[in-house]
Image (cartoon, rainbow, N blue to C red; front, side, top):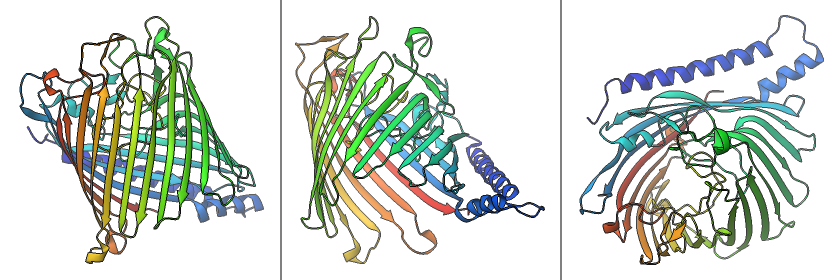
Length: 481
């Protein structure tokens, strides 16, 4: 069945719930700002801060996706549907002003529902835009569900000179190269605290968290040393009490280069490191080049083995902008002996936490198998000179080779080095005037090839069989106040 009865009604219900949330926030703000008593100086300052600088923004988003994957057993050349859904999301974000120039609140919530859904495809449960279940490791058994989830609920503070800021509660958090979030049309959410200090020429960031949810789960979950399908992933010795990370970025005044260093840790499990050197040149509209190193080492207690020695990914990026043209090229190399794939996060299971890897090629694969070297290049062109303002087209391709096969912490020396490749086409539109101002639309097609399809999916640690993937995305922001 291509469509499930009642999905449209669920979408209306989801949108209505978010509207109710916005009305509630408006009501609370009005009560705080309105008082029959003669206002004191403190009351007036409090009201002025909220009235003048608070805002609520909304976002309507839609994803239509269809993905076909080649026979995962490797026994035939037949492609069959792997994902097929159309999902609507509605987001509301409330951002308060700074009370006494130092204190504030950020709140946001979103709703998601599938308007079209093929219930014969079990992987649709994990489509990453509607909800796969309550929490990581507690997914639904039949299909994805509609619902509303809070993505931000934080108290924030800054010093009067604005050099030190801290937020605590439920929010996306970022430590360069170490801690990041999974994205849908909005980011994932940690439960924790993040602080940022910005003295002259420096940016120092620290974050600590004990729970996380990707945006396709309703509630946060503890961190784990194992995968989601383990019988007890977040209890006993499997549970990780916390993750944290610290980074320092340095850029001299008016310099065209910068340095970044980061280190992070999941308690008693993984240590992670990051280094980045970036430089810019005034060639055409701008040429930027960077070198990045991501490293991870695991404790490897019995039953929790990950890497044999230091695992790493390192690469070089070059990007050039010239008029209506944009070009990007990246080279990436990976070493991940042991489990055979580099995990860009401080936990093992996907979506239990997330790292902050800058390399993302939207080419289906993560290009992160042990021994693999991968290269990516793409070019995009703005069509304004053809009297098509806001339109952009692009094409890109990736190729990876040299992947090693690991099974149960042992390298399979009989297996040939693995190869994979992909090419992509983009058609993008961004409206910047009129009633559709802010609307973005993107059509993205990926043709991914596993060069060893006859071996089946995951013969190499993170290499599935060939795919054809098409995504159509729409996003439209709107203001509430």
